[in-house]
Structures are given as C-alpha cells and as structure tokens.
Length: 217
Image (cartoon, rainbow, N blue to C red; front, side, top):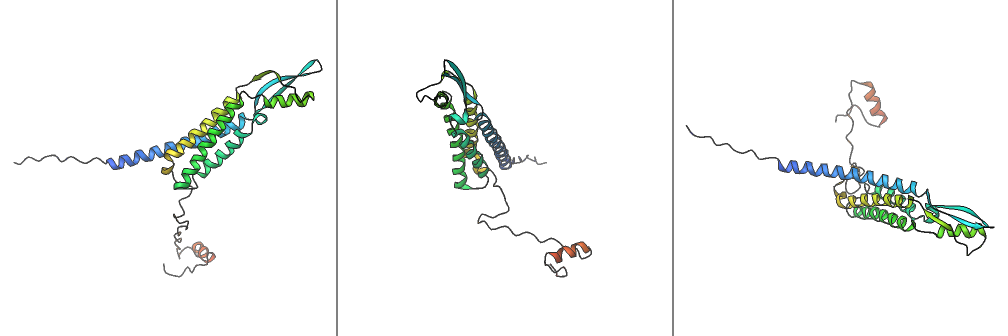
C-alpha cells in the first residue's frame, strides 16, 4: 500500500497583502480627513479668540486693551481655508496633481503653525491700539500678557500638516472623487434600462426617453 504524501495548500498571500494594503489605505484616508478637518476648524476658531491683553496709559489712568488672532496675524486663518480647499481637491486630482495638492496641504498646515507660534509673543497689534487710544504714536502697551490661544492655533496647524503628510505618503492609493469617468475624462456609457413590454409604466418611460419600446435589444 503506497504512502500518500500530504501536499501543502498554498496560502493566499497575495490576497492577504492586497487586503492589508486596502485596510491601510482606508485608515490613512480616514485619518487625513479627520486631521485636516479638525485642524482647520481649530485654527479658524482659535484665531478669533483673545491672543494678547494689556493696558494703555490715558490721563493718569489706564485703559484695558486686547487683541484677537486676526488683529495679530491673518495668515493662519487664510492658510486654514487654503488647507480645507486642498483637502477636498486631493480627491479630485490624480498622479502628479494629487502630489502637488497634498504638498500644498502640508505647507498650509506648516505655515499656519509657524505664524501662530510667532504671534504668541507679538505686541505690535496692541502697541497700535495703544497709539490709537492715547493719540500718541509713540505709545506702547503696558502690562502685556498673552493667552494660550496662539498655541492652540499652532496645534491646529500641525494637524493640517499631518493630514498633508498622510496625503503625500498614501495619497496615490486613495480613490478619486468619482469613478464614473475614464482616465481621458470621457464618461462611461450607461447601460440602457430593460423595458418590460408587459409593464405599461416601462413603456411610457421608454417613450419619454425617446426610445422605441418595441425595438428588440
């Protein structure tokens, strides 16, 4: 009696690798969307908060002054809007265009973070308000203090930067915004609906489309 040797069954490694790649792509896509959206929201909200406070000497007394993020610098807000537009545009372009848009997304986040961080110690906006309040162009703000909002804004910029880095790393694996169009931009032909001659509503719909419901398909 012959000995039957067991033949090892090959494991579907290719399918496992493909599934793992798809899971990684979905995770990176979801993370980029969340990071970009949350980061832009944080920047926009934090830029409207009070960044610095101080006083201006007027007539032997003092007047309280404050400056919000837009008074200090409008760059983080503008870059957050650019980042949101780039985050959406990532899914509308492919290949080199997607790489460029992803780079723009990352640069927007980096720029917002840097300018917000630099604005955390800025006093020019309050000095200008002090000069306007006192009528003295040489007046400066006193008792200057800064809040944590510039750093919150910078953190939001870093989230946008992370979204851009994910798009640079994994963007080529992400789906496009619409799969209805071929690569040359030509819309794929749609399959004509089946007309059931026994159903009057199908016949009327075919006539409305300008089709001959009696024609054999």
